[in-house]
Length: 136
Length: 134
Image 1 (tube, rainbow over the protein chains, first blue to last red):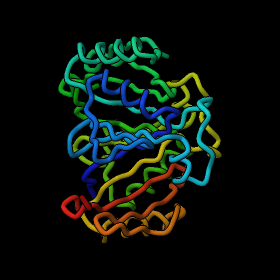
Image 2 (cartoon, one colour):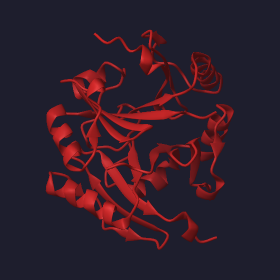
Image 3 (cartoon, each protein chain N blue to C red):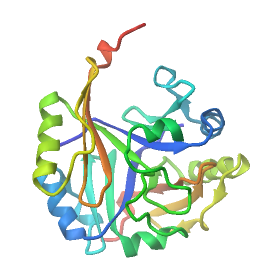
Image 4 (cartoon, helix red, strand yellow):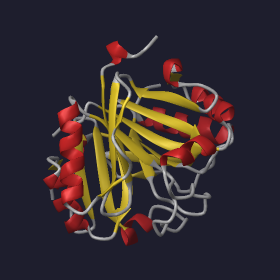
């Protein structure tokens, strides 16, 4: 079984601020799937999207309360094409209201840095070269 | 900015049971990225889900793992047909998941959903974008 595409849905307090944040990180918005209650950030065209839904709207899709930011249910690891892009994204995130919660890690074959977005969702940004994974 | 892949990381209580569950749904496991602490489920060439034991997951975040009484994320996955949508949800329910809500038919999109054995919510969809109302 293979999927065609993925939409990761996350709750946010302010859709407009979230739009500005992800636009500053360099991503485009799919306007057809965006309105005042939600925005659709294109992470990889035709394949990977993140939908940021206003908490009130998000709540309508689950019978449990929206997490209050004191816990972590998910960590989202996203791959980019170079180490420079990893650092660039984390730096822009921090400059625009995000924060870091761990130090960059260099595993040789993989470089990773992380930021927490405006709503505390945690993103692990990585550049990996699987051909360099140690075999033992 | 574009990404080339995504790994959705989620905490679980039992890695082996989680592996069995997702295998029964028809997905393959990337064994290179799996061990007793984590299972890497391949959704497609660029999309993966890493299920980590709660203890291991905890080492990546300074905040506690939720007890399953709140929702921070819902993951929607697209498939190639309505039949595959129902097939996955039926296989999930037959293997310990619970149906989340009734299937919804929007004409251009068909959606079904389940809560997996660890309480994570999944929306399963088939969409025909050419039929999206303008």
